[in-house]
Image (cartoon, rainbow, N blue to C red):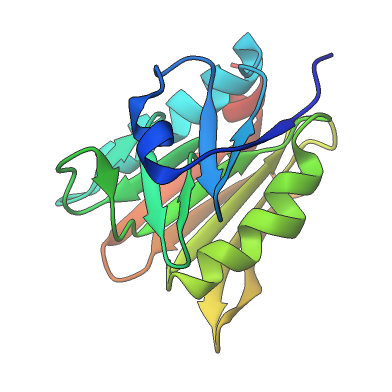
Length: 175
């Protein structure tokens, strides 16, 4: 399995790079991650499609999120009210689907960056542990709103003030 790579690069150099391989920009360093495996992409796509069902929200499993402090991140999925331009400035929520090669980056680095950006929800899917955690922003930090696993596999989840989605973990992971 490929590892995450860190390459120093200016903002201008970053903007001139091709879309592949998958890369983010954090404080003058490009973070290159391996492309997600098929199952990972399918989970992200299913969640993006679920977010699309909420009125006035747009779900996507691809896109650049511009964060404060010179950062561009690419969550596995997100929902926004205004999908315009090269960068999404204020998503309503972001999703990370964990994998062995990006687990630390997703949980240790990205999670606080998403909180600092004021994103209202952070969803974390762990396919290996068969969990979905939905966190909401409270006082610049994350609090768990919902935890789905094989013992509690279904829930209706409010996406801030935008609407409610029904998540079925077996359908999300296995279907």
